[in-house]
Length: 162
Picture 1 (cartoon, helix red, strand yellow):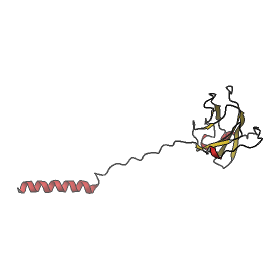
Picture 2 (cartoon, one colour; picture 1 turned 120 degrees about the vertical axis):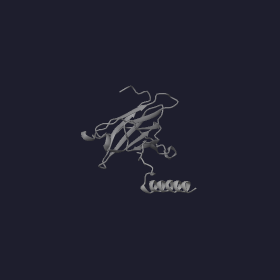
Picture 3 (spheres, one colour; picture 1 turned 90 degrees about the horizontal axis):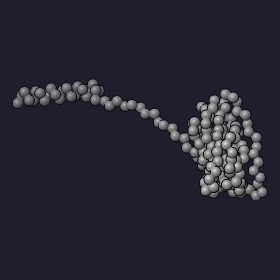
């Protein structure tokens, strides 16, 4: 019986020594959170028609060459779903863009807008257009606080490839 008791005490002391020495700690591997850009769309019910409005594109601004960005705008030509997609395609200023905002003024003079904060290559904004010609304005805000209008054009329903 003393032999059993001595073995039990020895085993107990070994387990206590292991526990005290910290060998039973779990290794924690830090995980990096993944970033998924999402478009924030302003609600449509706030859009109201402007009486007698005429859709006229305004000027675009030249972004400095070291901050240049590539923005692609496309309109779906299916009459049941004439959405407009604005895609951030990168450029030299890829890491300098804090926000991309798209505003679509529809042919019926209602406006809707959406934005993406910290866009990455492939980030896009999808807004509903019309089966007529709509005005698309895309602004980018850079890390230095400057905002540039990089797209300001009419987008017809059946737009030819560019």
